[in-house]
Image 1 (cartoon, helix red, strand yellow):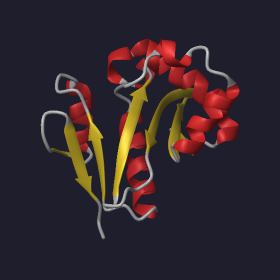
Image 2 (cartoon, rainbow, N blue to C red):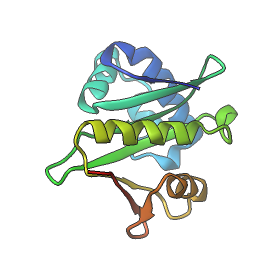
Image 3 (cartoon, helix red, strand yellow):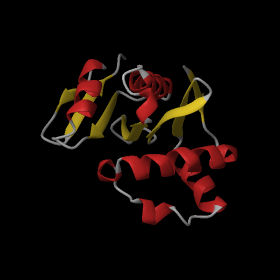
Image 4 (cartoon, rainbow, N blue to C red):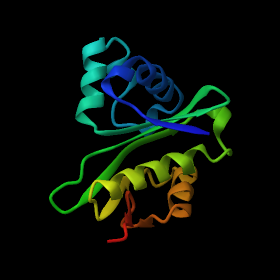
Amino acid sequence: MMLRALTPDDWAAFRAVRLAALRDAPEAFGSGLADWAAAGEQRWRQRLTDVPCTVLAELDGRPAGVASATSPDSDGAVELISLWVAPFARGRRAGDALVGAVLDWAQRHGARQVVLRVHENNHHARNLYRRNGFVPGDARWMGHSLPA
């Protein structure tokens, strides 16, 4: 498993994996395929600028998944805003690697916790997050405290 942080110059790779995610699991994201399918290069570059933590996982030389997180807010919380694993990589720890990369990034950037929203019926995602130290806050939120 290879992980790499994406920059605005990686917009084409991000576009490919993000569109695949929106096709595969449209219910899991706040935006839909129609919101991004016709987006131009500048919009993709801007997304990678506005969202400072975007990590691509590659497995067997193929994009295996992607995760994105916000900068720490005034309370020291980073929000993991999206995570997707390609069907061929599910069950092969790609999700764990992506969550770990976000947690590491958040800690290096001074965050005290990482939070996320997950649909209550998304049992695979909830299990992934629990396995990586997240605890439920309410039906849609989970959180993970980072060491000081």
